[in-house]
Length: 198
Image (tube, rainbow, N blue to C red; front, top):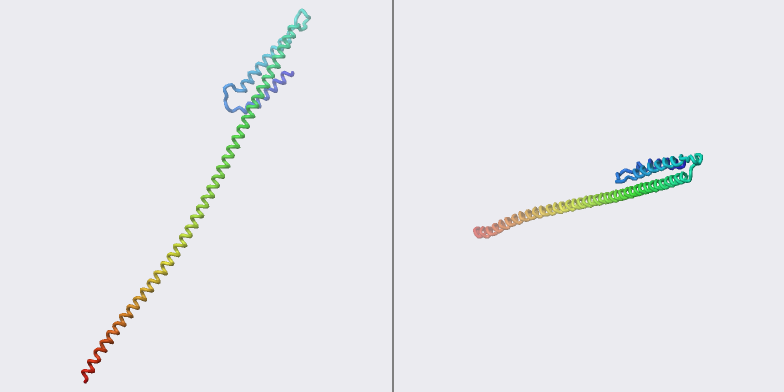
C-alpha cells in the first residue's frame, strides 16, 4: 500500500513537471523518471512473487531464504524510491532554475525596455528643445530683419529727403545765379544808358 502511494505520488509529480519541459534535451528528465518508475514496478512484481512463495516443507510458511528474498526486494524498492525522489527533486530544481532564469531574463528585458524608453523620451525632449531654440532664433532673425528693413527705409527716406533738399538748393542756387547775372547785366547796361543820355 505504501509503495503504491509512493508510485502515485511519483506519477503526480511527473505530470506536474511535464509541462515545464519545453526544450528537448538529450536524456529527458521525464524519460529518466519514467524509466525509474518502470524499474520500480518490476521490483514490486519481484517483491510480490517473493512474498507469495511458500515452502511446502514448512507448512506453507516462508523459509528464511524466502524472507531474505522479500527483504532484498523491499530494499530494492526503497532504493528505487530514493532514486525516483532524487530524480524528481533534480527535475524540480531544474524547473525552478529555468523559471528563475526566465524571470531574470524578463526583468533584464524590462530594464532594457525602460532604458530604451527613457532614452527615447530624452531624445524626444532634446528634439523639442532644439525645435524651440530654432523657432526662437527664427523669431529673433525675423525681428532683426524687420529692424534692418525699417532702418533701411528710414535711411532711404532720409536719402530721398536729402536729395530733394539738395535738388531744391541747387534750383535755388541756379535761380540766384540767374538773378545775379541779370542784375549784373542790368547794372552794366545802366551806366551805358546814362552815358548815352548825356
